[in-house]
Length: 242
Ligand code: URA
Image (cartoon, rainbow, N blue to C red; front, side, top):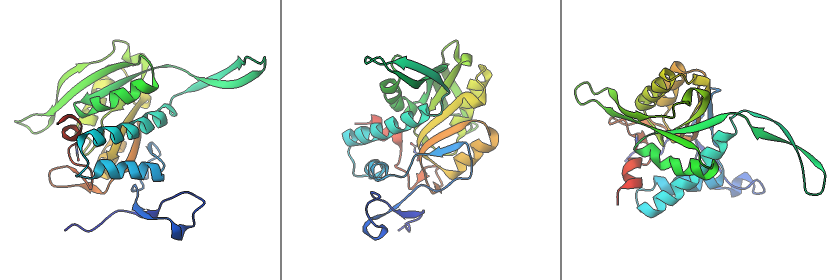
């Protein structure tokens, strides 16, 4: 009953002409320099098609979500500082390379954000991971901090904040306030998510102009229950419920 909305684009390998490429809905463009959207490649669009489909069963939902999470983490790592490092190869030649500078940690917003922890561990061996639990207060209907466990030295680290669905941004804003209260400057936080809403992005960019967001896709908007549309439904339910 709802019309197809959102920008469409021909998506396919470069050696195909535009008329040979299928048309797909791609991410809405956003105007903030701090928001990085993953390249809208055929791979990414196909993975998102799998996880958005209401008929995709749980095992496939987990498998394809994990692939997108991996892409997000790999892109997120590109936003960390690096320094020059020259090494010598086994054939005695030098190679002018780079190494990461600075310590990192992950912080997941429970419960859905915990689904992104493994993807981070797969890329960063023995990475420290903290957790924040924020839930809606029944009385005020505002987000409320229920629990946090964060590395003691978090103020010295870069933080990869993990939450797959970036809807109104209410929980994420509260999570960032917690991180800032522990001494993490905004510019050392990267917020990784699979699907964002334009509302969440602009709320965030206004409040935290130096914080970077890495997202796979910016969707059309929110429905009356603050679900992202077209979205994928409740991420936590689809990932964790058998
Ligand atoms: N959280 C979800 O899991 N899905 C949405 O659409 C919004 C928030």
